Every structure is written in structure tokens, then in C-alpha cells.
Length: 385
Image 1: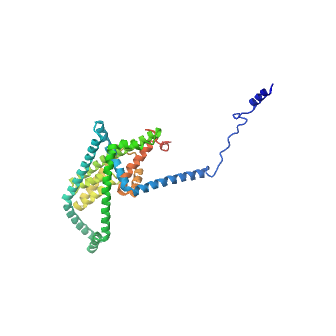
Image 2: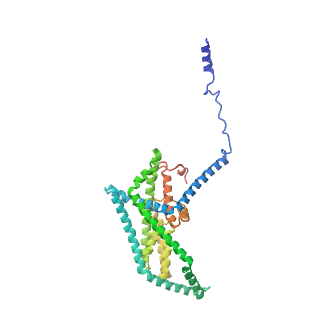
Image 3: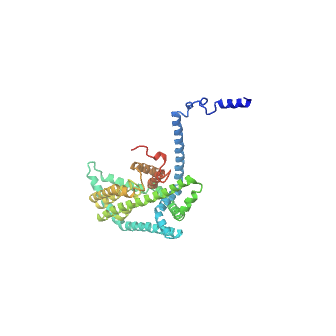
């Protein structure tokens, strides 16, 4: 046997790297300050703090740029609501520019007609309402005089004088100047919203495709799903809410007209507009209608108005809302309440109106994150509720 053969034998008998004799069993992972339970908790806490910091910066930036952000969001919501009409016109061969102008003119006609009806009704009935309010104040003063803790006429007159002094004070004047500034900002935002809405209606799909240029593959498909889900959720929410609000406004408005309550039409329109604030909007408008009825028609009519408002709200909440809003708004009432509270704190009335559809869009994105019917992993149900 030569030297070469002996080396071959030794090579074949030497344990290789895959031989069990030389493979040491893996030991337990080395624990450090960041791999034990407390370390993992600290790491997750730092991540949560970083996410909250980024969200806080974004929210702060949006509140500082509310004159731009709010018109853009409102334009997006209106464009999503009008999207079925735009698709129908495009499918009939209507050019984009003509379809856009038709949609905008229709929206302006509807809103302008409602505004004209409100102004005309208020102008025709304002004098009667003021006379009824004076009579109501006199009745209130007479009723307060017969309470166990009767208020004297001097005390009542002092309250009237305090109100008059406030209306003629410099504080009220500065508030009026602030109101003029707010009106200017409102007009600026309205013009910006109209321009943005025009381009969303005309070039919305092309704008979204331009924004998706950096994405490819699965990221592009996910972004497309997010865009489609956002448009469908916002559009369904607006159309469903408008349907529910119209039912509320018609029911309460007809009751006010039958009871001959002044400003029945403006109050019905206020009910329609405030119904876009979930849970509390229609109720607040109903309370306003009851106060007008109390001043103008007396406590009996006001009680009937309250009963009508409660009945309409029950009809909406138990029958109409679940059917109309089932597809567009799949949020628990507690989530709606929290979103409404946060939106009101951050953005006032506008934030209250926009908070719920934004929350619905966020949940909709979670439900299609991994596929058309595949939600994100944390949202998957692990066990029966």
C-alpha cells in the first residue's frame, strides 16, 4: 500500500463536518439585557414610542396646515362619493372634461338650491320667530317669578343687561373680528377644495397611478388595493350617511311643518347636515328644533317634537343604519365614539365630521392588507370571541 492509498484511507475514516461525532449540540441562546423578557418589553416600548412620536409629528403638521389638509380631504371624500357617476359617464363615452363639469355643476346646483331655500325660509319667518321669542321670554320671566326660589324682575333684568353689555363690549368686537378672519379662511379653503375636487374628478386615476410609480410587484398590488378600498369606503360612507340624514331630515321636517313650528325647512336642513356627525349630530339638531318649538309654540308642541326626534333616531339606529351602512362602516360603536372624540379635540367640528370616515378607511386598509380578502396578521381572528 502506497503513501497515496494510506492518505485516502485516513481521509475516509476522519470524521467530517457532518459526522455526528464532531457535531456539538446547539447550546441555549446566550441571554443579554435585550433578549430576556424585560429587554424585549423595553424594545417593544421604544418602538411604540417611536411610532407615537411620528404620528404626533404628522398630526401636528396637519393641524398647522389645516387650511390645506382639510379642503384636500373633503375634496377626496366628495370625489369618492361622485365616483360612480363619473364611472357611468366615462362608460358611456363622455369625455373626462365634460363629465367633470357636469358633475361639478350638478353638485353646485344641489348645494345652491339648498342654500337658497334656507335663506328664503329664514328671511320670510325671521320676524315671526323674533316675536315668538319675545313672547317666550316674557312667559319664561313670568314662570321664574312663581318658582319656590323666585327670581325678581331686577335679577332677570340684570341678566339681560349683562348679555347686552357683552354684545357691545370690546371682547365681543374682537370675537367678531376673529369671525371675519375665520370667514376669510373658510372662503379660501372653499376655493381650494373646489379646485382640488375638479382635478380629483378629472384626473383622479392618473394622479393615483403617478403616486404609485415607486412601487412594483406585491407592493404595487397592495397600494392599488388600498386606493380602491379607500375610494369605495369613503364613497359608500358618504352616500349611506346622506341617505340616513335625508330620512332624518324629512321625518323631523314634516313633523315640524305639521306642528307649524317656525323655520321648519332650515331646521330640517340643519338636521341633514348634523347627521354627518355620528351618534350626536341628529340628536343635537333635534334639541335645537325642540328649543325653537318651545319658544315659538309652547311646551306642549316642544314635547311632541322631542318624541318625534326620539322616534326618528330609534328608526335610524335600529333599522336604517344597519342596512344602509353595513358595507361601508364596519366599526364598533365604541370605536366610533373614540374616533369622534379625538377628531373633535384635534379639528373641532370639521374633525368630528371627518374622524369616522377616516377611521373606517383605516380599518378597511387593515382588512385587505395581505390580499383582497386577507387582513393583516394581527387582525386575523385567532380564537372564537
